[in-house]
Length: 348
Image 1 (spheres, rainbow, N blue to C red):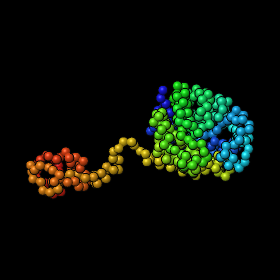
Image 2: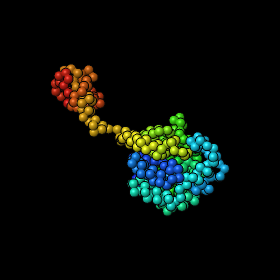
Image 3: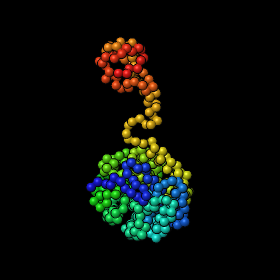
């Protein structure tokens, strides 16, 4: 079974010819404050993104109480507490997610959230989400992924920390259940060092799975996102915050509003550079072509009936008149139908 070639998420259709779908990853950068979450939606709308995404989890369903924070979390928070303590403060229940969804849709934004546990996945049914985003932490969690796939909604599957063989297995397992999969390349370091971005993986995914690809970007600043578009990414996700100086695990690796606006601008510019995959003169080139490309002219005087050869033919700019230079070989061996003076345009 093949992945779907066209996937509809909200009012947007994503396929290999569509413009890039840009997601502002609010994540937990609201710091547990519902009013901040709503403000993030307002600001993201002004920045020109297509969607905003949050994270949905019940801490006790997600993690054991004694698990240490990841190294980047310790660095950003400057403490050594447990992940449990950190995440407990950042929970947003499903009924509040529904309020956020309604607020986002009023701003013409598509609302997404990542469920991190089975209880949250099913609780989010009240939101009737347009799609599910799968965090890299669950890319190899097949039981959970099968539950999600059975919802029949598009899935944006991040692949940080995985081996290619694991991605192959997951895709093979999910396609018979749900073919609406967008495969996101990702490196799960915050921020990601440029030497570990590996955008060539996007081509590997496209060639191996014939699938719509995207990029979950954790590089510093605008970073690699516009380059991923050049490599074929049709979805770009980037962390977003109102203020990088706030306490929290993800703020420092996120974009502030002016940076998010510039990210969208740079992605749209990258798209415009791609254009068509058909090689032909552009409309603006047609006049230039006439002015600059060469046609066949007489190198010297040619008598009527004389054989046309490389000795008596040449090519020059003629303003678009005459036989294009590329066809000169076709004239060799033919006879002149009239007399030509040097520089006359050959008009056989």
